[in-house]
Image (cartoon, rainbow over the protein chains, first blue to last red):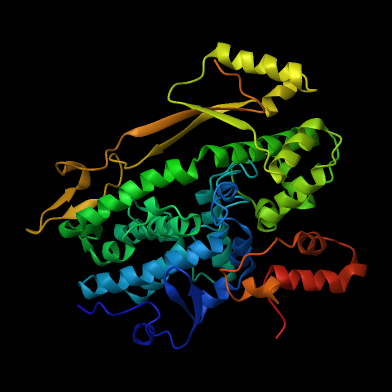
Length: 419
Length: 48
């Protein structure tokens, strides 16, 4: 097996009929090659360029100042890892058609188009759909623009294609998306716990009956990957300070929405204004997508700056606190907060701030966050034993990572009362 | 030039250009040139 390739290897590009390509410098992997033709056309498309203005980690830069990388960055990294994975699988005997190779690379390049401002922070609150559902709608729209060339990419992305491992490479428990975001997010935050051996894992991949498997000798790299993801969740993705910032942003958007729907005019970005006034709709229509394409972190940041001078106290307080990083305080617990505790905080808030009972919900926030390190009920990671048998990871003895779901409850307020 | 370097090097980060976006959304034709420049910057269809 030839281990000495990189995705920017000119031979690889030539073998795969990519006559010319552009290279983009990436701090994690070095040069990433983007083949000419549809890939470059898509990279230059306004939908893709928009990802430059969507931060990968939402509000985590409030805790880790280095975490200012974008979704654009991440999709290029995932695209690079996909090129590497395909090369490994091909060398090991997996057969692909040229269309399948193109389809799966396109699927990973486009897999995050449906993210809105600050990534997960406002998901389902600007448009009432998950980012995956929006992504699929955008891919289908682009498919029309590119005369049906993205048909297979859409099928692979949505799990409709019969060769299941192609979907697993894009959206499985050991996919190129997770592999890139762990590497990238740990690089930009400086959190060493997230570092994974992406190169070794990629080299341990194989397929059996069109299912993605990992060879048994790669099990420790796999466990490092699963552990890293678990640690990154609590140390970065759900860090209490970043959580406070994200929930404040969400609360502010809810406040803006309710004021707009009551007929008030606010000096916010016109696109944000229009999208919050759209009727909730079960399906995604062109009008929603047109507005969504113009909506990014800048629309939110601009609105926050404008709202510093708002007549509404809640808007003024939340936007000023967010911009100046005077974030609300957070209390985390393994159990739900008692009603008594909540009421005490509410009374305290009403005594100290010029707000009424109905407005308190925008400054006193409760809820829960959870993470499952490894899922066993659906699409398990399959291990290929040396004797050729395949077994799910959960059936292995002495696993480092269990499948339990960890839930944490939060209470967020301007001041917290000690019990 | 550092300000615009993220168009070439995705690893560059700079304060977000809020006003480009707002002007891009302006319907006023008097701002045509301004709007065109903003549009090209936002979509990275930079002049050759």
